[in-house]
Length: 186
Image 1 (tube, rainbow, N blue to C red):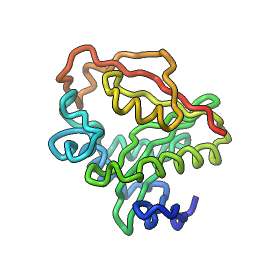
Image 2: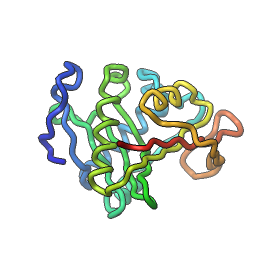
Image 3: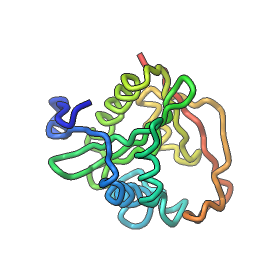
């Protein structure tokens, strides 16, 4: 995928393009991810986890590790020179894991995320020759699960506990867990 990849004709996405992240993007990516999920800034969008968790979701060194991993790519969504979204794709056995999917909170609800997700799925499929993408979602995030269901993801019925002591986040709600979702690609 080139840095000048054309976007569709939707006016909200017409000037959007995508590129893989490089090490120099790590600080910006960490700030974007944390602003989209945690704290008051996240309340500008609908993906906030501010009522469930506090603390940072990710730190720049973790982002750098993902960028350096040969089985991982962080795909960026840009508008002009501004990074307005990111997604981490990781090669797994016969599939790709999709995580850290973010669109800047003030830009959410305009079709950017839908377009970005389609692009990320195609990128993973082309890069690794996979036909399945999977993800985990905090199980109480029904509106987010519904969003992914509208994008063709299905609940697998598999759950795993949310890490209660990862040194970054503090749970504001007890017994959080991840629910796995997956999508078979065309």
